[in-house]
Length: 194
Image 1 (cartoon, rainbow, N blue to C red):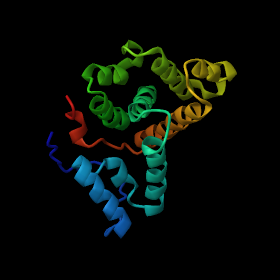
Image 2: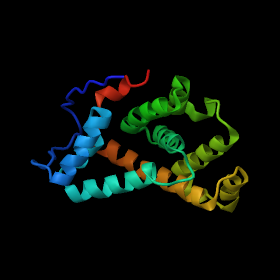
Image 3: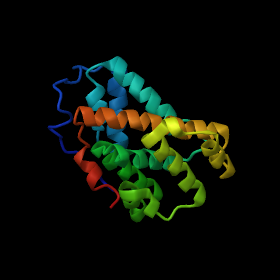
């Protein structure tokens, strides 16, 4: 599917324009995004006023979402989508909802996860993963050993539990940041994979 990039005049509510010109490595990263996605995600543009902050954000994102894990890329995107409605994060619901639609090929799954993951037709293992991510988002201090053991009982390793927790934590942080600065999703996300 050809994706047409349209400029978005509203990336955030803050007046923090990207460094111009961008450092060569950053520009190369943005070029890869443009080539692969045909957009530069607004989250990257929002961080580009401070290259150290952008690099820290992208390093954490890349290791969590693209690095080695017992969780599939789709499962990690599902976690991003499931924590986002709790936090009412428009950016992440839109961007990661599009990713779930693309990776799963299931429009209903993408919509269910955005609205209420409990309505989705999920295997018990994925349901347990999302229950844990939701609990982390709503009441992380209440997590106890039986909650971790429930994940083990569904076949998750301790490393997988770490990855579930790290992914949910990252997107809780991202949700809060996006809401605080009124970060807007790229318009293209709304139509992708529908």
